[in-house]
Length: 375
Image 1 (cartoon, rainbow, N blue to C red):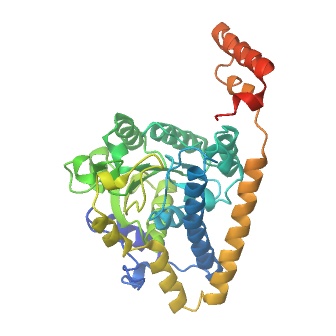
Image 2 (cartoon, one colour):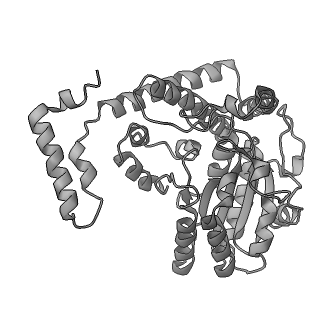
């Protein structure tokens, strides 16, 4: 199927006509949409999805051991994160909330990212080297910035798109409305990627909006909205690739922006500070686990002789080695507590200087060892 035909087919669908290439068992249900990807690319996508799952497990374990701060789990959302990022060019800008670790994995995961979750802001700054905006904790506040970057790229003629991830809970924030409205008015090359994982902490999807879908909200802003199976990596790849190509088209036939609603599920807690058993039924979780993106993609690859047991063992061994290296490097990094004062303001205020001097006096009097001794 040609790009033009694919675009018309996808974006002429109703917002509730969910795009799917693989069913829950990993079998192709819409052959015309199956992407023509190289064997190594498909295997690499699976490796990165599997890395995401293992990364998630290790980060949660480190947090439970007190070796890392609060962490947001991605388990269940590997398909949307890897599929969508593989559809991009290296020059495209990615902005994310705080759960889309897979976008970093698909861009060779800077080791400093682990350092960030251990409390060091330098890890956030390192993301710029792979064209990823620093992660954002304030819900939806990053979306206007992503649109601003897209508008600047359009004005400069850079030929790059801005892809911004956020959860369905973010659509209740004014920042998201303002960003989409601006993108529609100025026709910016922006792909809004809503990760609808059914829960915004303890608030279910149906309490966020009375709309039948989130994708249909795009109509009010004057651009296309599309719904995709977010647990299907091939479907998210196809939809994001088409949205990116439309974002960069100069013919003006269709609006550049697109709102993608990726329907999926968060298997774990909202963060390591959350107890999901207080607000959702385990039976619901198990029903969604039957659509596990890793299992369905593995079936697809095995049936095409792209993946076998020996290759899987080699992937797992490489993942463990890579993870150990990332963690060891992050834990070995030295931190200077006084660095927290360096970038608060362009010019330090008197109050900030007082705080810096107070900390230095405490360190001189007691020593860092005593200040860090919680026992």
